[in-house]
Image (cartoon, rainbow, N blue to C red; front, side, top):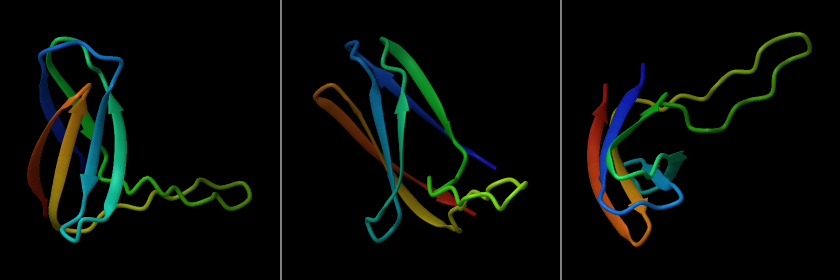
Length: 88
């Protein structure tokens, strides 16, 4: 699964910073996104961003978040907006 995060950019910037936190306020993931004027979107793959090393000859595992409420803060330049969503 994944979560789509949409945001509006009114003034262009180098990038958007999307910060996702769990219900305790712990940082779960940071994602860089597009910051051109207009409606923008990024997909979060529900990973914690803590990829585990692959065993010899294998593939690494990705740590996924559990069910719960998560907050998201999108910052573009000096402007930011906050929202929340539920992962089931």
